[in-house]
Image (cartoon, rainbow, N blue to C red; front, side):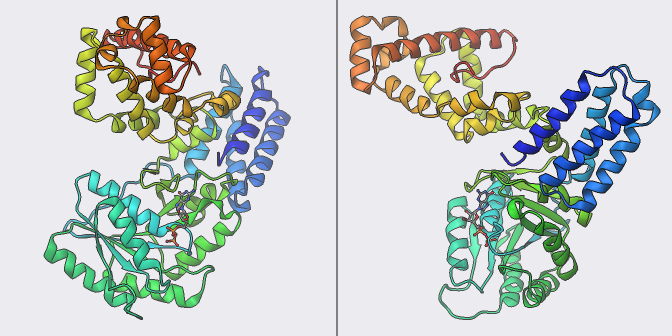
Length: 445
Ligand code: GDP
């Protein structure tokens, strides 16, 4: 993952500290030096690293740490707080206009992920009860209008665009007209996608700036690829001078790059990170929480995000029915299958597991976790009759053999599944009685 290496390095640093009862000034200096190196290796901008380590050092040498019962833990806490600080502190939500439509303009280099973001953002807004309109004001790239239309269709939202292939258009006029269109058709959020270039250039800035003046947006979101490394700071500064923006969106946080951009851009520009993009799918998108990101980096886990994702993946009606079934002990193999399918909707299970605390150390097991397992399980359950799914007690030897043949698996695999189901059903009962919630069907981790 993006911050894997940084997380490991910081964890090592803290592990060394943990063995110490009292911290000397040279312990603190050693620790700060290691943190500094880890951040620089993760491509965090030098100015940010200097500030960060300066503050950590000062606080770690202070009385609050010396007097603490566990100074090492105190240092981890300080690093956590300072990380939250450079990521922007408090969560900043998207701001809506008092008089709709709210206008959101997207700016950034070509390939940063603006068009994809337009789709993600509009899908998310629609889910929140808004009626968004996507506007294709990128008339530079021949394919851009088509690409935005495709994304809009996937997201199930409307798009405002000049006829594709209609030659040169005026993006400023398109953007301006789209606002009037939105007003008459009662769209309450307008998302304006603008042209990007491979590198920062004056003409690009001028056009973006003209669009900004023409539509007077409530938010200008600067979209930046977290993988671009040390260039991030200069690109961000150029856009800040050329167009200025009210917030940042980090994309490609799912990548294997070092992610320093993510850690630099908020403090360098003084603008908050509002959203994060974590994949190519339209659902790989979430509001950005500085504190959760910091915990993820420090491997403190991200239980809050995990729980929210689980909640949004299970729709309410289903959850209510399920709760009822749990309580009355009538949970069936069909429900088990349904649950597993819903888990798959949550996106990669691996990604989800990565948010659990302490998972940094469990990467190997995580790598071995096999999502194909779910597919196999589906095949087995689908080979059962309705009666068998509702009452697994019917599953004698010959039925199990038939199911194994029908699903292309072995009897051992069928037995394994039935056992896991029984465990899950037992667990459900515990949950229904107010025990610890757990996710059934995932098998031992
Ligand atoms: P634009 O030129 O700024 O409009 O960028 P696009 O939206 O066309 O995205 C460029 C490429 O990056 C496309 O192949 C996208 O699928 C991909 N992409 C966008 N966001 C993400 C992300 O969060 N993660 C990954 N892995 N790929 C992304």
